[in-house]
Length: 274
Image 1: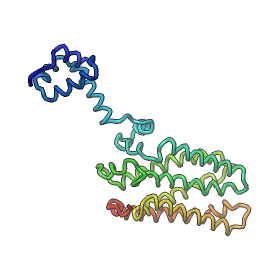
Image 2: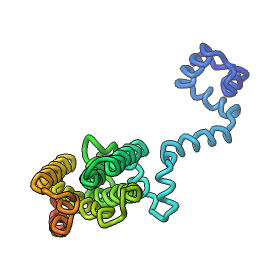
Image 3: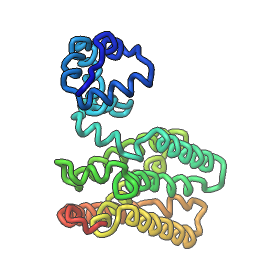
């Protein structure tokens, strides 16, 4: 090396007061000159450098927690579980606002249309089902690939997210039900269908992709309700369609799907749902 950067220039470079041309020239020189690299150390503010690196490491290693994650941590959810839940697409604000809008429409129909209760009781159970379908799976969950290599079983993550989505959606549905006309058994008639559809979808997810499972279950629900409503010639179709027989059938379906889901959990881990 036939030349070295003057000490004063190195000092100005360390302070960031050289122009762009000098900066590029000095940096190119420092790559190949050990003497100048050793000389510049005395001009560097080590404290500022350490603070900069600490800030960079903090931002990359621990992203800022969002509102949902902070709320989950406050109610004693473990931090790593809170982070996995906060990444759930169907727990984001836009999704919850969309569910709120659909429930608002269903309440308006229930209050304003003849037999509007049928519409509400048909739509309300589909919302948690849609949320669970959008909670996990390739092409839907932005953290899906990370979850595959995380020290947590995929089945466990799916159940955690499903419960979180189910609870949040049911809370919104319960609030909406308070604005329904009258206050009788119909106000809670959507609860068991919600559990039945979600459990059935999770059970079917051990065989096919979770989104396909949800679509299939939703289609069966809509076809079944439409067929039952068409067969009923009653001034109170909500009671006939969603009454005791429907509730009993859904209870049996929920229990059976739950047993099937537990029995098939290892198949889900092996990826037979993909």
